[in-house]
Image (cartoon, rainbow, N blue to C red; front, side, top):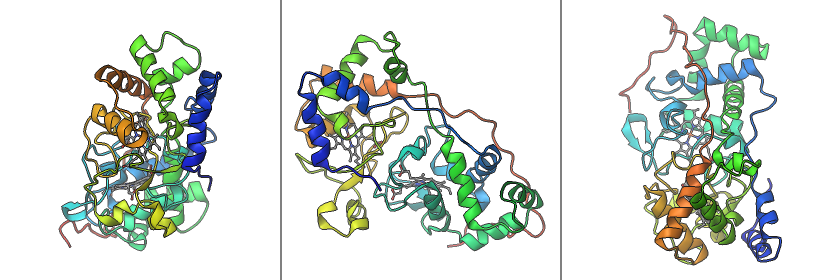
Length: 336
Ligand code: HEC
Ligand code: HEC
């Protein structure tokens, strides 16, 4: 897994102090590329599974419940609602552009999208099902059996095929063509003066040291609260952050730097979902990460820049899911 240390990132900031400031920063961020090499049949099946509430114990929660593709791939609430209206421990990150992440989850505990997709189905606080039961449901529906056979060429459905197909669909959820990307590609009219001033502040004050790459984030784990501590609303096992994976106390409060693509749509912000506005998020980041208090005008310019990062949202026909049969296990929405 490739990760960058903060020291390396801050060296990057240091590099901007030189004469080649602009060149350096603009190679650190890149336009989002359209999805490539997608297995269409597999992604189509994965799309059904992403919207499939029968992969949950209640028959009610699908991936799309918490990663709503009509709302930037998030649920827009501080922490998610799981089976039986359980309060989740952590804010749901967007699934948009998640294929660009160095690892999945805020602490990076899943290596990739396929490994990630197995988690929520069996998580008692989320979809609260088991992989075996999820496969039984799919096996009981002839249209699914036929579609899995067509895509994977096997007689039996297994969880590996389910997560592979979901991951293939998720690879299509990239958002190219934001106004910032048009500007990066040379359309100098794509940004207005305030937005451009915001990009210059973002670049020159050091935000780009952590929020870089195609997704402006997703590339490294960094401490939240470098100059000043962050007062988190989350339980202690969440604020372990990356430390939950590495076992190191020094990695407490280290989180995957989130993507800033579509950040205008993915409020509320941070792992605890405590901050509802970009204005406040930018103020917190400036003070806690960089020891810099932006003026109201500077803050508004950075916010204006962040709003130019909204790209083309995924466009597709809503999948129609095949009906259950007499053999399909019934959902148990109110079972504990
Ligand atoms: C009950 C709400 C809920 C459901 C249902 C749910 N998720 Fe999530 N998802 C979350 C939360 C919360 C996180 C963050 C957990 C963490 O980082 O520890 C997350 C994280 C993720 C991530 C990692 C993104 C990143 O930037 O690290 C991906 C990808 C994802 N979910 C995809 C899925 C898929 C696919 C499904 C369906 C199989 C699904 N989710 C079902 C709430 C949900
Ligand atoms: C040292 C690394 C670092 C620097 C510098 C940094 N950030 Fe962040 N940023 C993070 C991390 C880590 C998080 C996630 C914290 C969490 O999950 O609670 C984050 C979260 C955010 C979020 C919330 C996104 C979301 O979806 O929750 C925004 C907005 C943001 N940063 C903008 C900025 C801006 C603007 C700057 C410059 C003023 C900046 N960041 C500087 C590491 C950094």
